Image 1 (tube, helix red, strand yellow):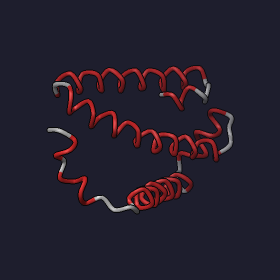
Image 2 (cartoon, helix red, strand yellow; image 1 turned 90 degrees about the vertical axis):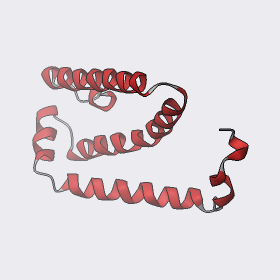
Image 3 (cartoon, rainbow, N blue to C red; image 1 turned 30 degrees about the vertical axis):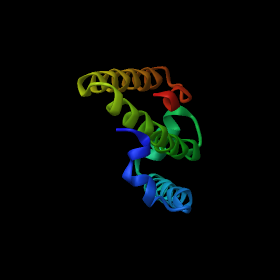
Length: 115
């Protein structure tokens, strides 16, 4: 389908980025609130010898990464077979799991952001 034929182009509001930004902020605030009161935050902060603020910000980094990954996923599903997209996503997921595991075994916090 050509971009000129896209029926959703006619329905875009000029406030769409404001609406999108407010939506993102509400997601970040709600996830931060749930993590601040989480029982695991102090334990993770003690384990990695960082402030609880950094543990909570780590969750916000994961939430921010969902935004560009959504666009990558839409592009990938549009241009590549579903099986290929799911295989690549699975490989990335496993690589992130290994990074998080190695960060825990080495007691280093910074690689958690990449994992």
